[in-house]
Length: 214
Image 1 (spheres, rainbow, N blue to C red):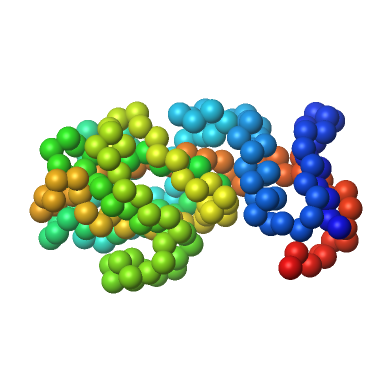
Image 2 (cartoon, rainbow, N blue to C red; image 1 turned 90 degrees about the horizontal axis):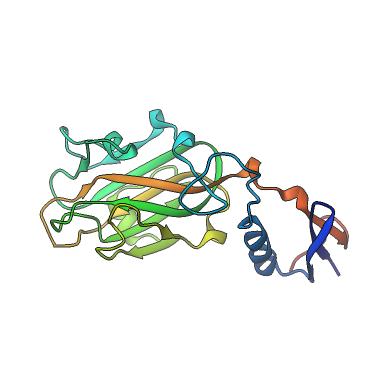
């Protein structure tokens, strides 16, 4: 039977017996939260960092963006903003320079009803359009409140589902007030780079490598 032990600083912290991939993911998440990122840039969530420096802006794109208020404005905390063009929907693709583990989002919008409300998240999609985003199976759907889209709020994600993110597609389906256009003042990404997650702390102590988990 495969058995996994978690060590940090030479001390045993946890043990998992059996081939249960879901339980293993939860154990990884539990111990990475304790600062498994190994230091580095701080962020609004303890143990995780602001991943803005990992965004490859040359490969980011947005469908239905206004010419005057485009996507790049929402990737920085400045005076600009992103606004949709012909209706309230937006389809953002965010590319990262390296694989990341995504823990949470920051979504900021105005208090006039134009801030995002329903958001669907897809990972590592090479091509997706509005029809595919509306009909497709997303990794997670968020129904944001007015408090969620205020400055300083953080929206936690299902962390175990965002462990190897190369690109993130964000489909903004509607806004808070049913307005004609949607405005996104800022979108931020909180998590860890995969290289900073201390997987050396997770040691398999029994069971053969490659043994079936089924």
